[in-house]
Length: 428
Ligand code: DAH
Image (cartoon, rainbow, N blue to C red; front, side, top):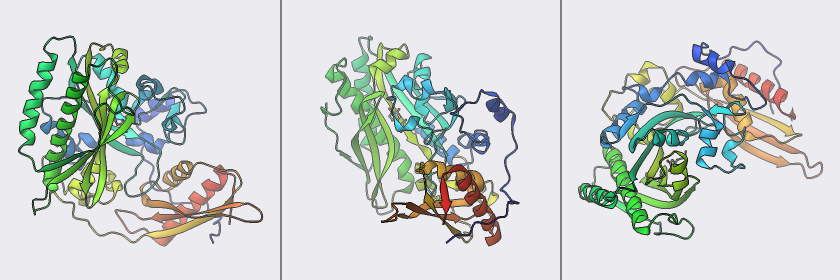
């Protein structure tokens, strides 16, 4: 049972200085949608993927080197219109990603991009055919070692001019090159997808031969890319790298797929991709072209390649982290002392239901990177009164210093205070 502390004078983790760009974001008109806190807006400045000695920067360069014939584009501002993030890509009106509990909004029409696909149409519109674009993306999410409200994605695409009479020959000759490169890899591919699957069909306007060639090109390009990354951590007993293709759904591609890699006995999802919907290309004024696109998460791959156990470490400014990495090199992270956790529970009766992501956001705002995980450990409904009670376990731990129990108590008191002020709940 948690007693509510009456203390208000809390030592809060230092709030980042308000920079010029945050002040600009703050100047945007606010409305009932505005839910992006300054602490998140401040992270737009960090640009970890641009730092050559940071694991995310190293991984970005590695991919760029592997796909060196793809033009690498610098990422535009993370502030995008909801049209760019969702509508241009045909996300349905009721897609959960649009909700205030899943995304950060500056106002009803402006948000922090939730994925790099938000820029696809603009890039195609500029006439670039083979390209990569890396950027920071923002999502309200749970709190644990693999989720952080900001992460990084790389988008890539390849299109051919369909009206060109040699289009097929161009794809086919590139396929030959990919095929011969794949011969030199130690990779086993399980493809669970079906050509022209009725549930994930080729597009009616695509001649099936073209669709098949594009799908082949997409899968081979990404098989090679994944091999090129994971060969750095392949076990010494020369076991092949196992990858698996599965069917997927994305509104702006058809057919759509996901690629997974076997890592430590489990399938790890790496990326989503597919053949660009002709409608989307038409919207980008390049309806005469066809091809594919993919989007991959950099953190998940970097955590494997560099052996980084907690996603918060990417944001650490502790030199014991940053000094371990060098541009162009994949090296194993050597953990420095892990400070002890301070575990605190909060239980309460719920009078009006709320979204869990809103609870996580409050914990994050009060504790920033000093919270390692939040987990619902009890959900109980009283048989007689029908009253619902929840208990959340919050694990406070700093990656850079010893967090005293008193500091953790202060953080926890501020969390409990904000929860009671925000939600219709009663602390037990
Ligand atoms: N944007 C998707 C995501 O964040 C990933 C993705 C899927 C990107 C399919 C693509 C694509 O370009 O074609 O989950």
